[in-house]
Length: 104
Image (tube, rainbow, N blue to C red; front, side, top):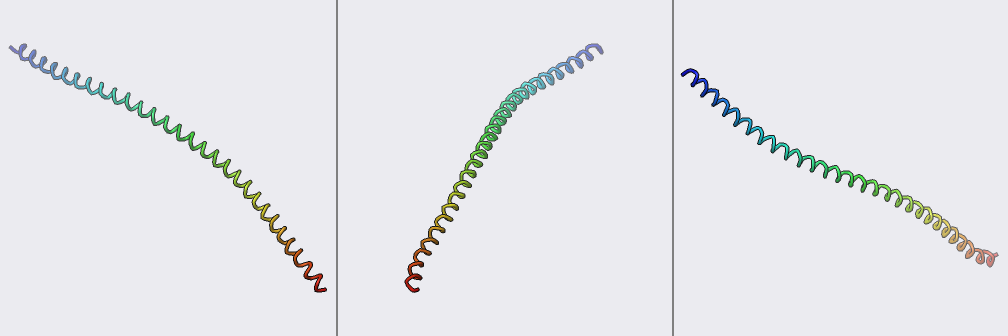
C-alpha cells in the first residue's frame, strides 16, 4: 500500500513537472520568435540610421559647396560694388571739373 501511495505521489510529481516543462517550452518558443522579430527590427533600425548618416554627410557636403559658392559670389559682388563706387566717384569728379574750370 505504501508503495502505491509513493507511486501515486511520484506520478503526480511527474505530471506537474511535465506540465511545467511544456509550459516553459511554449514560453521559450515565443521568446525565440520575439528574438527573431527583435533582430529584424534592429536590422531595419541600423539600415535607417546608416541612411540618415549618409543623408547628413550629403547635406554637409552640399552645404559646404553652397557656402563656398556663396562666398565667391559675395567676393565678386563686393568687387563690383567697389568698381561701381570708383566709377561713380570718377563721374562725380568729371562733372565737377567743368564747373571749376568755368569758374576760374
